[in-house]
Length: 146
Length: 146
Image (cartoon, rainbow over all chains, first blue to last red; front, side, top):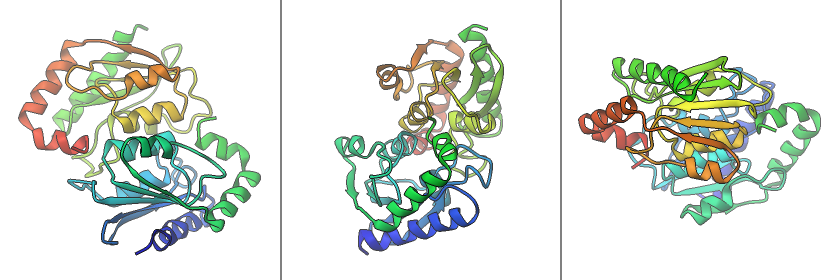
């Protein structure tokens, strides 16, 4: 399974979030051999819950795992500090980022701390976030604490 | 309200978590003038949910806030990278840590990044975690991804 294949699952989650009236950021946690462990999307609007970003939702959906070293977190957007902290604390081995153009979070910090980081420049992800930020700037700034 | 007064709320949450069979880490989010916005505790065991640490539970309980700059996160234990990332991303202005003896997470990193950090050495917090780590080492290591 390629990073692009895994990203497709995260993009699907982001689109689902958008269709629910939410923030279009999706994520998925895979095992090294490409088994989907869990996927999810930002739920700030839908659940009125500021603690559920795409990555935390995917992490939660994967349930309690004893070790994350061989797992891969795939996300449509560069992870914010909250989600970067999640990846570092749980020693998630690798992360695939759909794009880091509309927002750049902690992916360089993760690379410095031993995480295998792949940053794509996926046009679907860039377009989705560009449109969203333009349409709902106040909601986007709320989601990143600015 | 002193840091110690605010810590009392987090300690109460940690004790509640312990009484439920969970990991005894509690937290609370206060406004600068001492109003409790939300409190919570680690729910890994109770909800079978690895994404709910004490700080994230308190953050969730506080609901959607437009600005966290004047808020104070109080936690019984030094925040792990996941919870440190939460504090940094949402620009939570200050953090009060019950103890950093049994575990040291990202509180120095937060101080370097402009968060007002107070580390106490609360005997109740130290004893609670020391006893817990001795009694349930595998559960503790699971919770910090080791």
